[in-house]
Image (tube, rainbow, N blue to C red; front, top):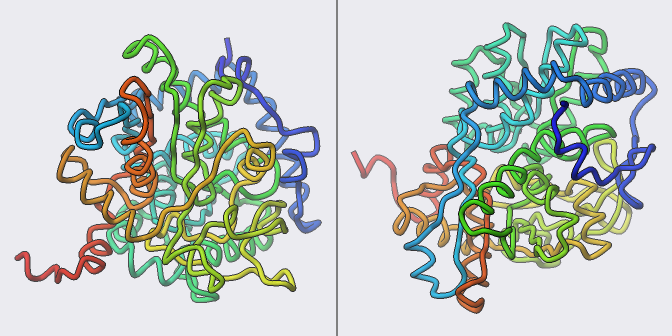
Length: 410
């Protein structure tokens, strides 16, 4: 049978790619045939046993799934309240959740006869995953990355180039994820015949938000099984960090129909959610608009111009959010909060000190919210947070933020 998560947990979008008032397809006429072709190919793949056989083989033998579900015993004791579990997707090949989705998209690209893959990246993990899978299948890979992110995520830039990818620094705007996605879309319009755009998050024009979510839903599907085995029931609360929101939707989606499970998404609060927009909390501090082919919540001024957000985390440094998250926010199925850079850095250090796990700055935001709420919850309350990436890529950023000179450790 085809992968059963689609038979059991499917919730939207509608035939127009809409989650309520959000999502849709806002693209140029040049791209519309490609979008429709991709949608058609994906609809075929969803019910194709051979597609899922290839995916499951690679998830198991190449990515290393299922990733462990880990009871953070020392952290739980330290916080003194709820039991804290971590879904260890940072243990995947390439060090993050991104490869779950990249495999699916590139298998589709091969089925469509595309030989050139382009991608955008912020923290670099999606770029590394795309470069990795392109190397495996012998495909040309071009990754667009904001110049600011190229500087602060140097280890991942080197990894991409080692894997044979061309990394294109984007100097427009603030040189972050939004600007990288802009340039990737321009490339796609120019090279429609041989190029496949591998989007790294649950954003963009339909079918990308649903397709990326579906591939990432392996995370939540495993948590359902693993938590049932470990505790005899589902978690009471699931928590994940959100930029565009793919790791979060991957965890949340299989639990949407389980009303007893609380769902919390954690946005990047930067220097604080304030009028200066020194943050990337689009649900907390933004309003609906259109960006990158879909309607969602965005940071924008009174004239609808997209504002530059701010976060210490390159992967969360995006002025919007996936449209399904916007919908879940509006209908109240999920709660969305923000965490500041200072709080995320404190969580980063605590994870290192208590659990021997060096997290990426992205899941450090989720962990910071766990640290806020766990002490006030009963000891039989179960929290599962998604440890969606490891922190190798962030050590220079963290060292600088904490006032250390890397050369001093030599």
